[in-house]
Length: 77
Length: 222
Image (tube, rainbow over all chains, first blue to last red):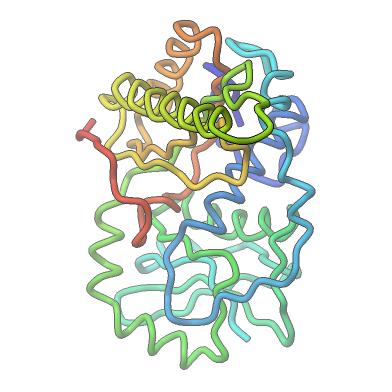
């Protein structure tokens, strides 16, 4: 996970852990939102079934503007 | 029930990962392809954080060593036979798609104004004008970002975002060897646009470049 120019050489992957990704909580939330966008709208669609149980999407549908604004950019993690 | 995480070629390395419900992730070979999946007695996939990361973790277990077409979250089949039948029917298409993303990863860039562009007009003409203005700003932002980052990417697409409408979200397909270079370019863009907050996450599997989704914007071979 990276904010601004600080995308690290090591992979971002989840779920984030402090020892592998020295980023703030906000960075993790951004990564989760990016992941959600991709999982729910991207990926190969085969003619199996797309099954989604009712989810607590509200947990990650945060105010991204406020969230990102609180993150130091330009090298901050 | 079979839950599908993605499709790849024949595995080069043994697969050791767990997926949804901590189920072991299996490889099911179908002709020249391999489905990455897990078996469940009962499963109702919920796109919560834990399940999303579990799906991603299974995808990454393969992505670390070879190209994979990640499946959309929640893709299930009633049986292995049904899975084999569907993949077998689309083998050529899936192989072509794998070739297109081979050696590449996806990076997600978000551009967000530090001040709201939407205004607080209650209703009427001003509201529509504010909406139009915000829309034009987003389009201009997307165009600028594409122009600045295009040379570092193979392809790019406007992404569908769960976040606010002020946000411009673009997916870039980048060669794995070019991730650092792309990251530095995002940093330069951030310095040029202090009035916007940029974020860049990844590398992800190429979720935005493996299906019939938003048409490609413009990209050039890096």
